[in-house]
Length: 142
Image 1 (cartoon, rainbow, N blue to C red):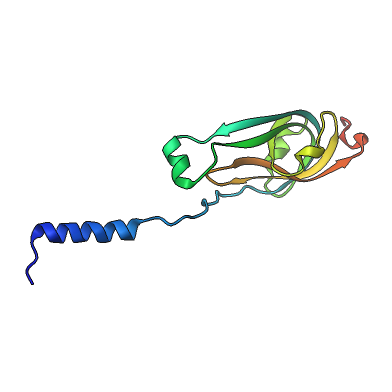
Image 2: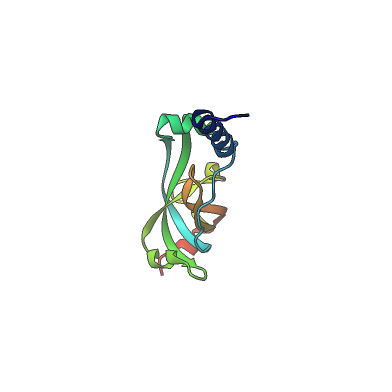
């Protein structure tokens, strides 16, 4: 059997295309930051839409048109944890993202929670989780 350069090129291109096809997969996780324990007062709560761009990328990954984020401004009373950079924000306001438990938050509440920088290509940020509403005296300025 005789192969021409053209037929070999087509065969190689077909094999390469089959090899390079990317199956449906989840996103690669980003590096995570240290976990921090925080105490603070909820200042502001905003829900916003993040539209995935470009459209071809969104469609290729099978993503919805947008993702809802709940951003919470927390006035930090205390932050602790090994390697926790949040300690530098004590006494200041810091914006965090909430994925779960957002419905139990209200402006002015004092809370204790954990926070960590993490995510993937589709949802990344400084996340607030394991939220516990506590007595306002814990959020009083020292």
